[in-house]
Image (cartoon, rainbow, N blue to C red):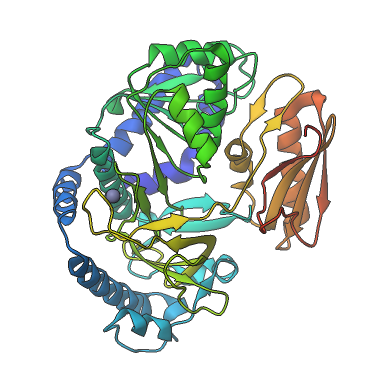
Length: 465
Ligand SMILES: [Zn+2]
């Protein structure tokens, strides 16, 4: 039960961590890794993974009955223990259609009533808290449990097995952890988590100037597993391709952002490896994993997916609609019929060549963002800037507009009383990150800026065409 305490204390430790010399940072990262490893690789995890691998033999009706029973259990649990659902109709779930007696839950409703979604069965000390900014850049605070983190890890290990990767194979990670102080301008831009044989690299130090260091680093780790945000791996792939020869990696896992076909091709070419994508969210109510045959499979043990049109009616095969998830595993904050804001469609046609009966889903790319290019050569992926939004709670939608040379406008739709205060802090943080090369200003707006197709980019570059 230490994970909730550690997670909530992490922001306070960041300053101490940043001041530590590099070997000490390795030690601190490994200490953190050791706790995570206990959650991820307990005896329960291997038993669970074994069971999950058996599920791969399921036929379509096995999937149906498993999901039906899990749905019925979570709806019953939520109604009994979560204040928000107390008034929901008390109708049993005997078929998937019965679920439609319950209302669809919007992200905004959840954001405004977060505390009402907490189950009374999970005491505060057992809740792990996390922030997410979703597809619109509006912050939401969610809670989950250690059991869920473990199950999530076991499911990830199952996807690794589809790629032929065993637990604890050496890997290089490019996600959002601040592993190196922002002011650092010489290597190392990475730190080690020895218990998991993992090297965590900073996504905040990528620049034309540091590119040779990142290339040397990746050369040194050639042959290992590579994982990260697609936009970050895409920047690295550009470095590699510009140099002229690839850095072969074992296999690549992407998540946390949509993966564009061009980015997939580029990343795969730069690292001479296959890319396995996945779709998930911090609300932990749905999961999609790509298999070795390329199919994007709904993970049936994780949650139930409905794809609905604007009138909340199910769409036909191949037709695009809103993702509406009911998560099975989060006992701290169960979400029923949660419309997350992402879109996609069921993939019609024959079952996947991999032979698994897990349904095939195609998520639509909803956020087409630019990369922020600084005059000093630094490159910020949308996910790097996104990390700054996780502390905000009163901004409904936030975008970074590179409006003119040397000028960044943070453009936000206010969504709470603390919006001006949070906006000021955000502006200050971004200004200190970018330094004197940019003047960062802030403005409130009624609506976000959109691109054709309704896409809401996080970063808009109005300077470079
Ligand atoms: Zn498949």
